[in-house]
Length: 72
Image (tube, rainbow, N blue to C red):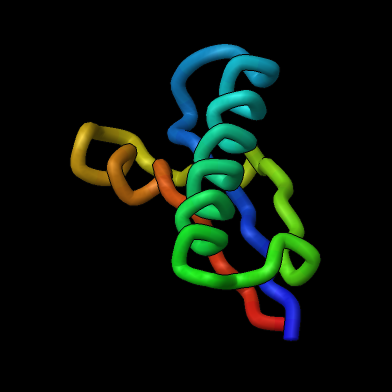
C-alpha cells in the first residue's frame, strides 16, 4: 500500500510561499512516518499550498494548515 501526503497552507501569503510551506509539511510528515518504519518507497509527497484553503480567521486557518494522508 502507498500513502499520498498532501501538504496544505492557509490562504494568507503568496502562492509560491504557501506551496513551499505545504511541501515542507508533507516532507516532515514523511520523515516522521519513515522514523516509524514506513518505507520511503511507499510514500509520495505533494503540496497544494493555499489552493484549497477555506479559512477566514485564525481558528479556521489552523484547520487549513495540515497534511492530508490518503491510503492508495
